[in-house]
Length: 234
Image 1 (tube, helix red, strand yellow):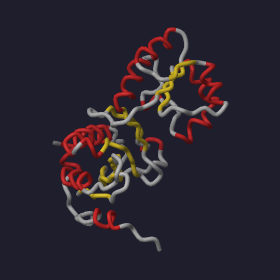
Image 2 (cartoon, one colour):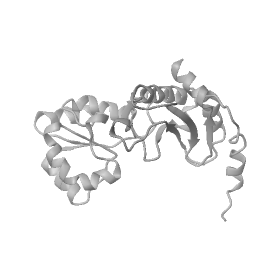
Image 3 (cartoon, one colour):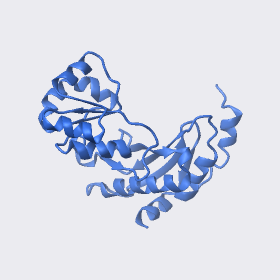
């Protein structure tokens, strides 16, 4: 069985702790980061929902107040005057039929896709390419809209899309280690608030069952469920 390196083993000190507050979990994750690159800080939230029921599928997006700390390349599928609006807002790639054909030919040098509703029939033709890569525009996450300027601006500013998986767990990045604990906590608060507002009325029992914070290379630091709920309510 492969063994973890000494840096990882050292980082796990404190990871077994129970009853951590949100603040302590984020602080420990940042302090224990050891990689030579600026690691991303991720959050995993175990929700008390059953995604096999459509009314319990948690999906949405949130614009983090401090962004994600990385450059996001945006492709906007639109036509006419919307092309000029998207370009003015900072979209990296803008087009209609030509952009669809480019993707059909194998081009995928972008991180997020936005489309106007009238373009979705054509974008749907490349859904098998975009979907598995998490690039398919979706109205629920605000990436299918006629207000392309707003959508592009938000994505560039650090808009995070999230979707609960089959096990009821939601994963999302909240920034970089270099942000420091304070900015990461502000981002996390925005994420938790948004997820909490999406609680379905059909969900029974505890909604936020568990929360863990981890960096790209580091271990997860588990937040006490009660502390997480109090943090959201505060």
